Image: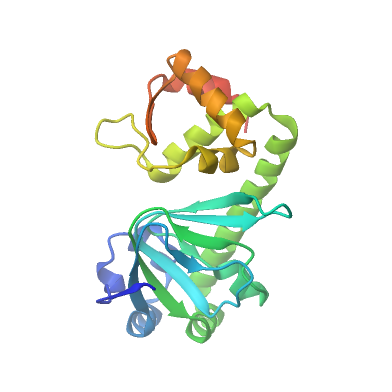
Amino acid sequence: MSTPLHNIGCQQCKDRFSSIFCKAENDNLEQIDAAKVCSVYKKGQVIFHEGAHPFGVYCINSGKIKLSHSGDDGREQIVRLVKAGDIMGYKALLSAERYTATAVALEDSSICFIPKDLFMSILQKDAGLSFEMMRILSSELRKAELKITHLAQKPVRERLAETLLFIKETYGLEADGSTLNVRLSREEIANLVGTATESAIRLLSEFKKDNMIELDGKKIRLLDLPEIIKTANLQD
């Protein structure tokens, strides 16, 4: 059960200009501001379940979320990492289908919920918001196509290096300028890479032996960023 939170004004939201709503007209933003419901989700808490019907979209005010799909064997596959300023739940809403993933808080997170009818109504009349929505969908499709290609063609070692860079790009680094600003289990890292947990553990140990990273529990410190980039073999 989420904890109700005093609604954070959209105009005062520190991530407004990095979210889809930066393109919304002021009148429409005021409608969203008046109708949204904000809550705090604790670490490990589920925001929505795979297979459930969508009733609106979620805008992340603060925190980190993982979206994961359950495979035929019941194994979790992380399909997306979400950060402050992002929205989620929109694909199921726009396609009038059930959620294809489960959203879980990776840390305590503040999230605003915007009802379906209001969001769809504004999307139909706000050209700027509609264009931004199309841009986000196109970007997600490109990333999905790229991931499929890499899963089919890149060795696991390259994919792990690329995953570390992806996590850095998504959540940034801590104040020391080298430690990834998120705590992920070895299993979660393996799910992002698309490999067995044992393989991820072995390769992380190899990266540590090669002085590319430093491991301290779930903390991962990037020691040799140029070598990690080289290992990732990025060509896109």
